[in-house]
Image 1 (cartoon, helix red, strand yellow):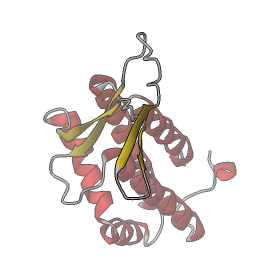
Image 2 (tube, helix red, strand yellow):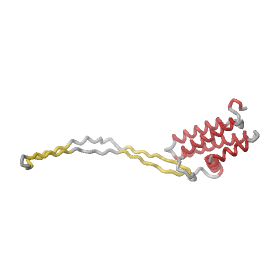
Image 3 (cartoon, rainbow, N blue to C red):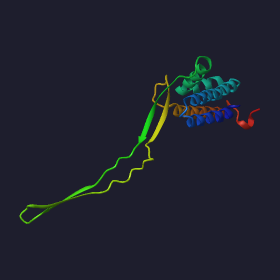
Image 4 (spheres, helix red, strand yellow):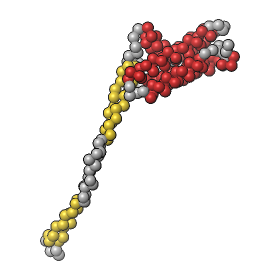
Amino acid sequence: MHEEGKLQEASHFLGQMRSSLEDPEVFRYNLSAFLSAGRSVAQYALKEAQTKPGGQVWYDRFVTQDKLMGFFASRRDANIHDQPVQLDGHVDVYVKDAAYLSERAVVEKFDREGNLVEVVEGEAPRPATDTEWSPDLAFVLHYRFVDWEGNEEIPELCERYLAVLKRLVVDGRARGMLSTPEHAA
């Protein structure tokens, strides 16, 4: 009944996570909010489905088909009841610098007998160095769940989980287990 609003909320917090990658504390806050909103989608669906014949069976089958459903439910529960979600990750450091190459030419002149007569060397002038220039430096943080078996980063997993939640709602509506927004009371 209220799944649509929570899907939008989860989508909002996923966007906030993506835009706060450089700040681990803000990233964690947005992840916490995403976990809660996503879990609410499933809980609202379960509550409504339980009022329909076969609703509990439908919900249980759907939830057990995708390991992300159980994983994210347990992450949300642990985050709320035990401790903040544990993150793992790494930082990539990117540096851009400049290197200069010079051109040097040597011309040797020989007479008819093969004797070296003259050597002319030339070097192209080196470009003036910009004394104000400094290398570009960027730090890119990558976040993963400590206990997820794959290599996916958290924003990618959250996007996949959000897609599963949307399928849950679409499937529930198609099977008559969940009401459509216009039929919600």
